Image (cartoon, rainbow over all chains, first blue to last red; front, top):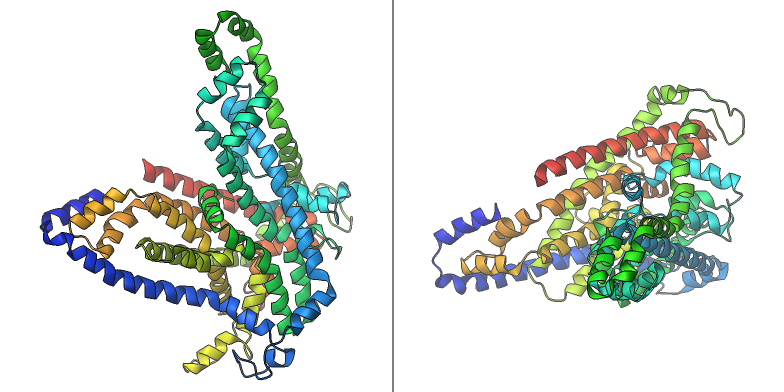
Length: 298
Length: 313
């Protein structure tokens, strides 16, 4: 269809004046695009900005019926100090960090191993295995919460980090992202190693994995962000205040602080900070990672 | 296939004896190594995915409860009860309503954002950062931000609206508005993800298309409608599919911002599952509702699969 309309456009206009005209149009269009893009960006930054301003107010100013961007009693970091005094945010950040790191590490190891088998090894039952893994992509996590909770109860894992970590390491869609990437690595690279009598495991660790760094990074980013922000399962799996992850911990803050708006916003910002900082440093990799794994599904 | 191929090739370049010696045992050996490589994943897969899925089916056929009252098989009684349960239908309806009214803006706004950037704006990183950054937030952070902005008396949104003469809206407390308030928060939160997918797809469109078009005098708008959008067909189908499946699982924001209220007007089916199981202690009944929800997800996936296949043929 694209070519059809293109052809029609071709037949309609002469070529010589057209070369200059579109450049002019592009600049006018570009200015309009910048204006609109900036307007959307400004709108998109408002929640951050408003949260920041609120967090640096006194509680009295934050709860004042007159909305102000510049508070009458000036800016203060009191809310942050109070939040740190309670001592929960650093603990929850640490909980989120190590559980998400463990989930990411285990996911990478087990997914790349099975993906290598699916890509390179010819074994009995491979087709069935592949079909079952593909089919499992469709299972929505909320369906699992009831049986998984019961199972964790039986395994005495409720209220341990294991309950948070173990069920989150299965990412069938990521297995396929990895398999697809492995499929594209030329087999010739492995042949020399095969001739030398290298084992499968050696070929995998010495040849395949080093060549797969970009996709491993992409999968790691995708899994880590998902685990860091996951709410439903950690919320169910833990009650112990010392085990809560950041998203779950914040939910308890809301009821604990009630109408302490400045403290609410300070906590929210502190919770948002780590990933935003990471994003500022690794923007290119994260964007590429999300774009390559994103269409594979969650 | 791979092992026999490498064996044959190596026999060509090297002496033939190791290759022929390898052959007979190679199928069992690759069986062992194949399943060996698959085992770590399979263990987790079987224990934490396959088993719960199957066990959930069993639970849904029992009267299991957290109080341990009744463990016996009761056949399809839970399903019969669910199908007659007005609250279940209402929560399913809320989920579907949210899915419809959220998917449209989440796809269209993402497309508009990507199309804007694709014109070749300066400072790409700045736009990408501001559109995508909210996606990195946990749902609880988003809910805290928006609950505060939606505050009817002290909130920024009502204050801004009153400046242009619009009366106060009880965003999260008005049953007619609450779901839309959640859609707005969700749009802000996750549109950046779809935006990145669109942007990546646009950047994959060969440059020659645009060069040819601008030689022919097609302006930016013309190029958008005659080159970019038609090329994005398959991407759009995928994004809509992923978005519908994601929206059907709505729980976090609603639970955190309205707790399903006011008067159950925003309670999605996942929250109903959660409450039946963990506040009502009725695990069996809750499992049955889970599988009705699962059925809906499967139905939607199959429908979309059929549509995509027909399109791509």
